[in-house]
Every structure is written in C-alpha cells, then in structure tokens.
Image (cartoon, rainbow, N blue to C red):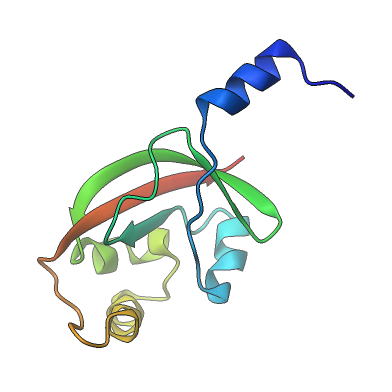
Length: 112
C-alpha cells in the first residue's frame, strides 16, 4: 500500500535516531513506566523517533539536566529506587562514577 502525502511528510519531518538501552529497560518502556533517559550527549530532538524492542518511541522533550536528576526521577528512568539508579550509573561510568553535578541531556519520550 502506498504511503499518503501526510505519512511521507510526517516521516520526513521526524528523524529516526538510535538510542541504546540495557535489556532490563525494554519491559518498563513497553509498559509506559520508563519515559525518561539521561545521557552524556544529546541523541535527538523533540518529534524524533527511535526503536527499542518491537516498539517505536517519540522524543517529547530533550533538555539539559545533571546526572543527579536521575535518582530524583528514578521511576521515570525505570529504576526500582534511588540507590538502584546510582548503582547503575556507577556501573555505566566505572572511571568517573556517579557525579551528581555532571551535565548531560534528559530525553523524555512516549511509546507511539
């Protein structure tokens, strides 16, 4: 079936980006629990889309945020509690560890 003009336009206006996730986050993302990810670099802009597992997600907000915001938003980040968030950040950044003041980017998203 051919795409409509609107479908083509919508696809061209959004960019498909790649954001890697640990396997443990697939289920919370599918359930709409995990809706935020903090990264050192910016992975996209609002309206960009990405895949994880079998689902597509749309970036809603991409904003500057410090690493210390991750434990504050532990539920939205897909963690069990603040300590789980901090421990995971220490594992992801073994050389520098958890640095609450380190600036990066918060990516808010929703399942499409």
